[in-house]
Length: 171
Image 1 (cartoon, helix red, strand yellow):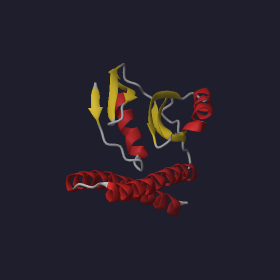
Image 2 (cartoon, rainbow, N blue to C red):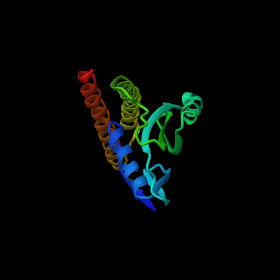
Image 3 (tube, rainbow, N blue to C red):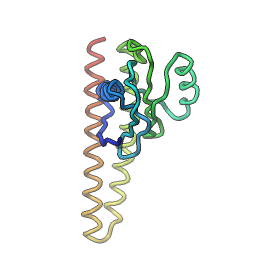
């Protein structure tokens, strides 16, 4: 079964809950493509927990081995911004990757830095395109595409910042 679902980086817990509910219903996540479209396979209902994590690509192999040794299994991965979202499953329903607010805040701050750099690069690219697109149709199309991507990126960055601020006030 395939399902389309928009995923926002600041909604890590909601995303994990969605995938976990699907697993409890007997729909195990097996892949995520770039749209993002989720691919599930029918299995016996799982009872464990699903957690998401984002790691830089250079750190992923050692981190993955560490978590697998601790009983976690990779359900699916999704590359994004020189890093990878990893969807983890653990048979223990009480297991947590981020057991404290400080580590959750560190995750959100890592994401904010990556999205901030991405948005800055996107703005530089947009300025370059505006100065170099000669015809008005090309400028209109480029402008619309840039506005859509910048809007989504800004929304994600604002959401990450709000979530990080909320967590830091609770510390």
